[in-house]
Length: 290
Image (cartoon, rainbow, N blue to C red; front, side, top):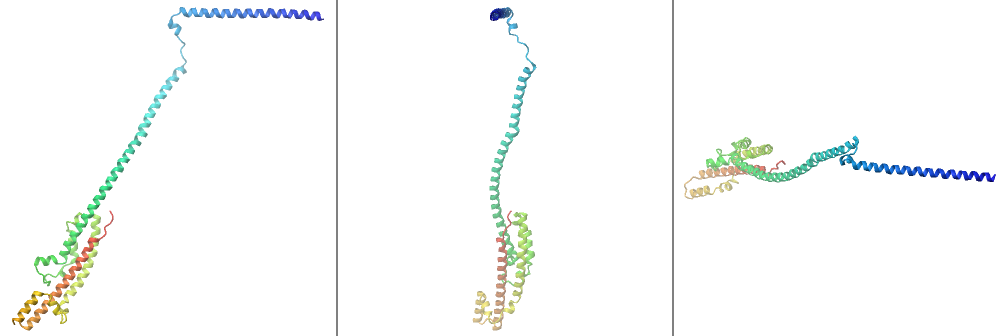
C-alpha cells in the first residue's frame, strides 16, 4: 500500500507541473497579443490625419445643456441682483434723502413760522392799540368836544347823548387797523369788545344820572370849592366886585353857574376816564393760541 500511494503522488505532481506550464504559456501569448495590438493601434494613429486623431465622440445632451443652464442662471441672478438694487436699495436711499430734506425744510418752516407769529403778534398789538385810541376818543365824546372847541361840558357836547355800544361796534367794523387781524382773532376781539361795551353802557347810564344831578348837588357847603377851581372866572368876579360893577345877586348866580359847570365837567371827565380804563383792557386781552 505505501508503494501504491507514492506512485499516485508522483503522477499528481507531474500533472500539476504540466498544467502550470501551460497556463504560463497562455498568459505569455495573451501579453504578446496585447502588445502587438497596441503597436498596431499606435501605427494606425500615426498614419491617420491629425484632425481624425484629435476627433472626440459627441458629448451627451446633459453635458451640453448643463453649462448653458449655468450661464443662464448666472445671467438671471445678475438681473435679479440689479432689480433688487433698483427696487429696494435705491428707493430706500432716495427715501432717506427725502426724509433729510423734509426735516431740514420743516426746521426752516418752524423758524419762519415763529418769526411770522412774532411779527403778527406785534402787528395785532399795534392794530388793537390804534383802535382803542380812536374809538375811545370818538365814543367818549372827546373828539366831538375838540371839534366844537367847547370845553364847558354842557348839554351840547356832553358824551351821554352817544350810544356808546353802537359807536364802539361801528368803529370796529370800519376800522382799517383791525382788518389786518386773522378771522379767529377778529371774532375773539369782537366778543371782548361787546363785553366791554356793555360795561361802559352801564357806566354811562350811572354817569348820566350823576351829571343830571349836578345842579342839585351844588349847595352852600361846596359851591365855593367848585367855583374857585375856575380861576379865570373867579378873578373876573373878584375884579367886578371890587369895582362894584356887578350886583350881589348876579355874583351869587354867576358863582353857582360856574360851580355847576365845574361839577358837570368833573363828572364828564370821570366818565371819560372810566371809558379809557375799560377800553385799555382790550390791549391786555389774551389771544387764542394759533
